[in-house]
Amino acid sequence: MLLEINPLVLPDIGLVFWSTISFLILLFVLGKFAWKPIMKAIGEREQGIADAIASAEKVKLEMAQLKNDNEALLIKAREERAQLLKEAKETKDKIINEAKEEAKSQASKIINDAQVVINQQKMAAINDLKNQVGNLVVEVSEKVLRRELSNKTEQENYIKQLAEEVKLN
Image (cartoon, rainbow, N blue to C red; front, top):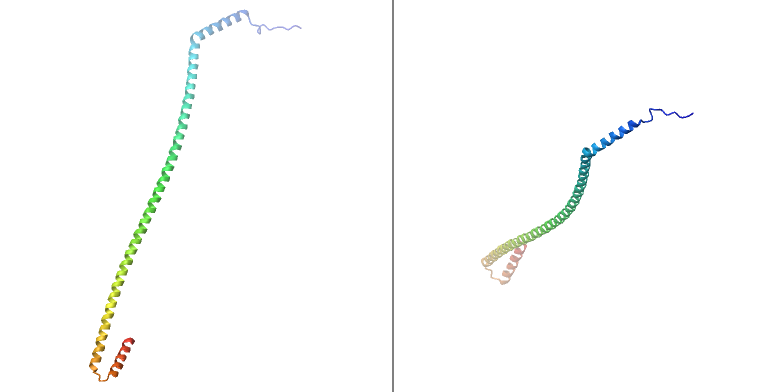
């Protein structure tokens, strides 16, 4: 049994010839009119992709620079905050010390004023006491003179008695 070949499967020579001519014409037309625009579009696409990659790299570098700048600004802000806190603490300490000194000054003034008032009252009390003693001496003297004692011992006894009465009061 020999293999029979189906004529539908075998191509005809004319069909192969015309298919080849059609393909060559199509290739020529495509090469003449479509090949350059297609290649141009592919080139533009490649250039666009290359530009996008370059732009992305540039943006990446800019972002890295911005990140570094932000870190530097953050460090500077922290330093400034620390400086401000230090100055605020120094100002607070200065104000507290000034307030303490003012309070000491006021306390000293109040104490001095109180001592002056105490001394004035003390002097007034001493003067009053002197006046009372003087009045008592005058009264005792009056009583002694009124009595006109003839006896000196009686006079001394009377003075002692009056002195004891004064001590009791």
